Length: 408
Image (tube, rainbow, N blue to C red; front, side, top):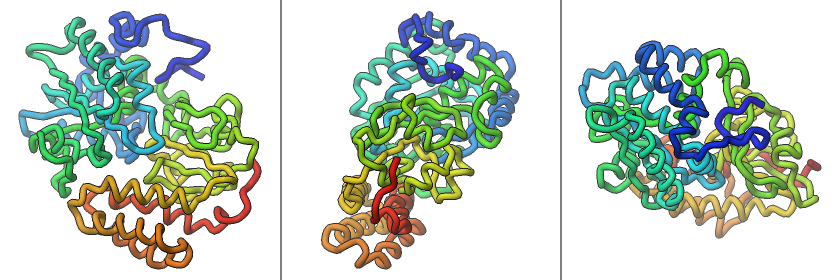
């Protein structure tokens, strides 16, 4: 496979992750210069041509977001890299920033130039102290290269404080501003009123890394892998009952069964026991059956047929020993603990779901649980409350998950 975001075992890089030599070796110096030369309009046209969706989970069209910020008349604008990776089972951004931090940072500077921002922020998960050090080293390299500094874009690093909700874009803005990380009501949207109530572009680490690679090469190179609907690659984090846990870079369109079963990737459950269930997208994701997993491909339109999505790229495997009731109770406890408490549907709904799962058999109260999930989805302010019951509902909608598991 073409070496893109991640070091290939057969093509190890010879340079240090945060070094001027890495800028040259990976083509990031060329990417930055190319983007400056062709101008912001063409930059956004190229991003639109590759149909780049956000790689953090929402998959919102990147070009549309950039164009919205660029077209705002406000003279002060901001760009933000969201590295607050707190979704259980997700650890791709951590590995990317440790291995190749200059890629996402180059993408961040290209974004700032394209939308007309002079200030950039990197918001990193508080527990990622080693990642923060690597980012600071990479920023020093960019400063020495003359890409940032007086009269140019400035990059500041802000550390999160362990709150899952801070990964929500508007809660992240509040955190940077020194307030509690609570989501804001939308609209207005961040592209019009974001950080410090100015137009703000916020992107995931992996999205910005793809930007750097696009301009280090070209549109045709980027579209050489993946599908027509979703060109490029995706970083996925495999965990749970899997022989080879870790982060893998795979082309969109790969068979999900191959990703979780082939020896070059997940290698199956690794326990010798059959596969029982797969959770796609982390704690706020969707449970699918083994049969669905072996029919699906890793792509947004294909997974949508099964009511699932790519999400943050987290894929958790569970073998025949897994107690799904206990797993769902653990997920419910996570959301009840992490709810910021600002809106009633989420504050009360997450706790009520946990109470029902802890005190009742799931099937005895499934109608009540589904009603709660619907109310939370419809009325919660942000994605935490809107998706907190996704895994629960998906499991209840698949009675086969509670029967005998399928062989891998």
